[in-house]
Length: 371
Image 1 (cartoon, rainbow, N blue to C red):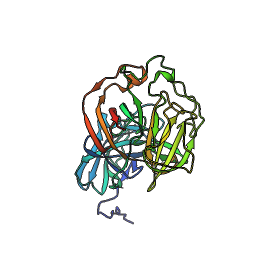
Image 2 (cartoon, rainbow, N blue to C red):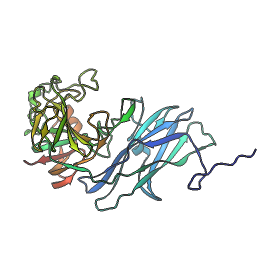
Image 3 (cartoon, one colour):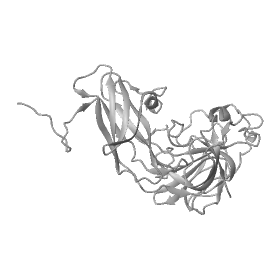
Image 4 (cartoon, rainbow, N blue to C red):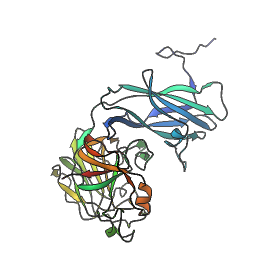
């Protein structure tokens, strides 16, 4: 019997593909400080070939129009093979991984309803049966505006550490296997630390929490809502190193989860032990003090970890975008690593600058919250 290749609904012939791809969660747009609408999301990849495969490029298409993508070193810097010690664009036989994508559009542009990806690969041992360039991973685009929340802190010189959107940070790059599924709760999370009056993150011994002048700052509820999660009593972690063997229960340290409504939850982590001022079931107002900034849980220096998610679980959830009602950009820090890890003086370039409203600040910016 003569077999003919089956046709897809679009009329194209089916293809065998060594690497499969999918979108972990449909991207949700957020207007960021650069005046662009960002779609930050992840592609998951799986190498079904018996040998190594190199992912050469990934183009993002809206209809027939290329609206973004990654290739070469840029792709390698945003791709993490599962189980590998380093980032890179190679997948061993049977290995999976993920790629962080960031596609942006001007503030006033109409967002596409759907995206699809053109994947280009090369096999270590090419098979003539396999396609090397093909379309994969279609996804809808969530065009509902991101939630607007009030600042969870007050005062100047707060650094947006591990923020969104186009850098492989400790938040954006954290795809966690929780309860048998991959989750990216921290996709839009921010670690807030503060530049001291001396231009450093600490003044005194690095391992002393009291050396961090913002240690103990009040943490304010960014929304009204109902408290659905509280952990208190986890001891502080000495600054300068992470605690050994953190678990899903201790990673966030002392924390508060507030149900904001419409399936959104605000998460405030690493609070001081004994400082939490609310209880589960309590109704809170925007601006109400929840606790004090600390260093409990999986943390190596005092900071507030803040993010918004689609379930009350800080880990088994999907991180969703948010915007602050208002803030002022003071500049961009160019040495966040040395500043936070060795106590180097902050190097801040004075751009961008100025007041912002209903936007998300971007990674490494230094901002001020009023109030």
